[in-house]
Amino acid sequence: MAGSELWVSLCHNLTPLIRLGVPEETYQQLFEAQLKTTFSWDETGMQRKVLIPVGSAGKLEGDIVLSGPDTKMVIEMKKPGVALTPKQAGQLKSYMKLTSSKFGLLVGDRIKVYYDDDSTDETVEVADIPFDLKSEEGADLATVLRQANFSEVRLRDFCVKQIKRAESAKEMAELKELLLANGGLRIKEIVKSKLVQDGYKEPKIDALLADIQISQDDGMITPVKKSKPVVKPKSPAPPPSQLSGRVYQEHISENPVAESPVFILENKKNNVYARAQMIDGKFTVLPGSLVAFEMIQPAKPLAASTVSAAKSKATLLAKLIEEGAISGAPGNAKVTKRIEFNSPSEAGAVIQGRASCNGLNDWRTQEGLITFGAWQLSGITETE
Image (tube, rainbow, N blue to C red; front, side, top):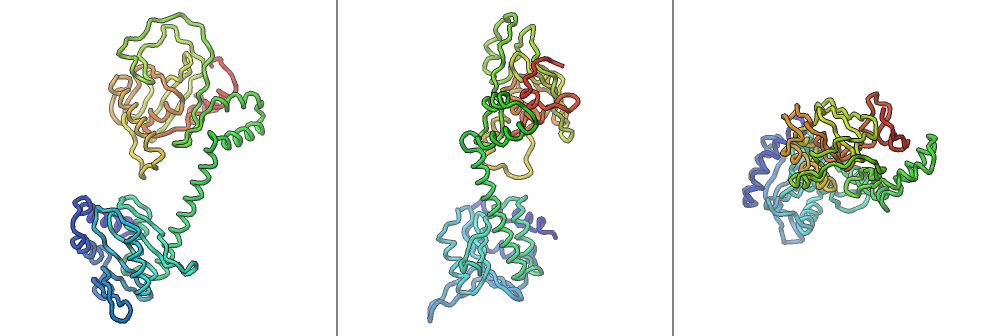
């Protein structure tokens, strides 16, 4: 079996025990059974309840020791359903040192991998893997855990890969923090420099960037440019029952003033084809647009920074469906009335069932030549 299949099998068998909070002994027995059946370990390569000499007379008992042709791994089991602690990690590191093992697993509500790095002469944690069916780290670990694949070279390569992955994630987090600091000042500086090179005038660039917010939650750029005053006939106030909606409004003036071309957002994979305009100063999705009827489930767990954004978009989509502004079924839903949004980014995210969207770039004119951001920057107010 491939590493991903091995990992899925392990998750399916262990996660029910974690939810039940079974005793540590029961948990260890099933883990050992998985090593034998799924990972093909035999009695010659797997020892349990191993006595580890300490000093001249003392002994410690290790839970599981896997032995290959040129290396060993110590596995320390802990009661599932209880978070792993630094003290337990210290215990595993001691076992690794006493058995001259370069590799160790701490298994509880998740799996932590430890590596005795020769270059630093210390034992370090290289991976913290939850029992997530789609975990790439879990699939990689499962591959090297098979008895047929078990070797120092493969285990070391796995550990080095995890170290590099962690370093890359840290660098990306630091870069994101740098870009988003001071309201996204660095991003705005980069954008301004590029637009100046493209021939745009600095006063227009400065005016646009002054009216753009950089979200600290997901890093999305959201235009908040105030609309120009438009003289139009007064219209009766909407019914009180419709005032509670933050962005959806059934009542729209009898003489709407269109202030932009029609912009298109298309996502063929999810059967989305939406049309929108700036109408009376609001970014408005037009009736007849094909949109999402439910939120798209991400392939990987969402980052903590985008969870709140996803929840707010899901709430808004559900509200629009409940109020009849969107009707149909998954894969075949339409907008029945004009829907006003706070920004093109919010509109793009909701109608696609996503946590976020770069509305400045994704909404384009029918020909696909002009993005909403470029149109807004140009200062043109006439419709096509």
